[in-house]
Figure 1: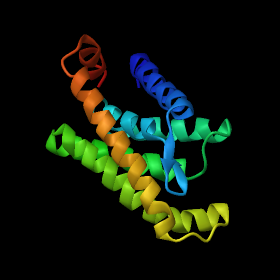
Figure 2 (figure 1 turned 180 degrees about the horizontal axis):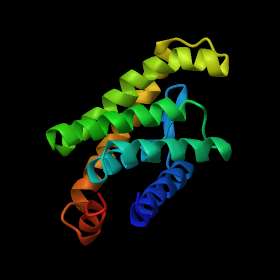
Figure 3 (figure 1 turned 90 degrees about the vertical axis):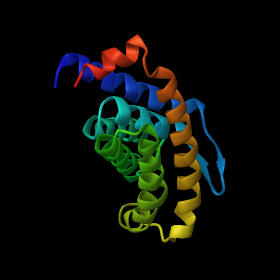
Length: 165
């Protein structure tokens, strides 16, 4: 991995961590943090699935270590980032990266969170506890990410990031 790519990954992590501290809203019984999902979509489009998953993992790790996130940040962020990257890489359509983020986080990760939370966090919540807030967060973040990715498309920054591959 080259230095430029590592710096870009670090910048995306910083944006996601800082954004999570400043942008959140109530989503039923939990809070939605859409910036992580927006970063997942943008990173999936600009860098691909593996860097997007690395960014999601590092963001979750930093948020857990700083006390601003829970262990659910790992499956929530990483599954959505992976599916967004795979969908964009396979079909080349930005909107499919958004759909991948929504399905990956909003549905798959929320269902996986049930046994994950039971084993690692000692909770006994059902899927109905996780699905609504995960969906609200991922849908709002994916839509924001798609808007930002569209605005970035064709800019010099986008071209420079795209050359990192």
